Image 1 (tube, rainbow, N blue to C red):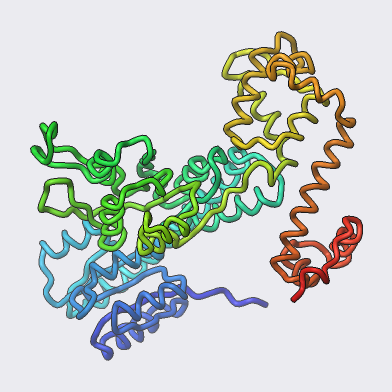
Image 2 (cartoon, rainbow, N blue to C red):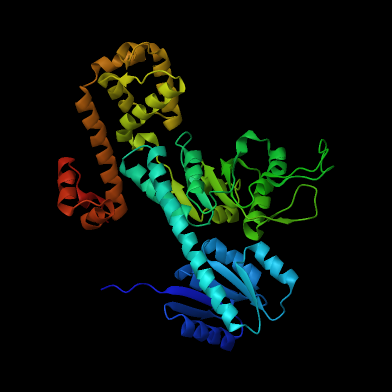
Length: 464
């Protein structure tokens, strides 16, 4: 019989006797609660990284890291934790400041036992409701994810699992992938499945904004900061406060903006152009790029410290050529979507056309495939998109499809090519260890050995 995990409460106070005493007091009243003491903000954060904490009671005045600073970092780690701040210097102003900053409640020393027990009970219940609400939102988001990110290949399944994993945290996310793979769509789903979903997501196309204007767009400016600055302007970071901001193609930002962005990540504050005042912001940064940032670090065009600040969590979006078995599903989806946009009856794709589409490399990835499918739908005057339509759209280049093998055989070859590529990468990663490769791939060892034999791949060649 498995024992139910106890609800965990964290007590943080630089007076060790007080922290341990408060733990004993709460546990004597709530036998199903477990209390952990911490004597510093750093120790509390270490516990928060390892434990699921429902309620944190922290002293407001502590050396090195005070209660407000600790609360801000704690909510980044665990957004559903209820935070209660306490101090011997209680005042209305202090209480209001704490509540505005995100505290659930406020207690003063010496602590009234009955009031403490009520706050603990309600704070734990609040955390439970927040966690359940977030769990239900995550389940709904995961279902929506299947509707938004189309595909059943290993690469797409891995992508969906990664999105679900990173969405729940508040860490910075770096989204990598070629142009047209859907990095912005991935960012939107990360935000939509996160605790910040009811707050704004601001998307910034960095290359589309001239370098000298990007700083003003992101951080704002004050009147008179430069020629043409006729009034104060609130930047996009302030517009996204409480939510998320997507910095699309971040590899193109200037060194000056990189320095300012580093300050945002380090200090959680922005300073408008021309202003001497800094403003605190609470924004989750999602960044995307189709460039090799590590190469840009080597040629000194991208700051190494900014790269490591951005690259806390990484999502790799696979190119279409690595998931060709998803092309038929994608084509069907885009055909139906295009027909709906044009308010016309759904059209079918002939097997020959589908075989041709599945055989292409699509260097522009999903974006190129969508545009091509739209042209096929527009130029098709009948209920089926067949070879004459393909020839019309490709200006005759599609005639080569007549020489292709039958649909089933062509599809089998696409799947076979994927399997060969996947197994080759798998063998390289595991250095020819078949047992480890089977574990990573989710295949039975015997099944993997049969695949290796069928493809004439020798695991010995990857060892050493």
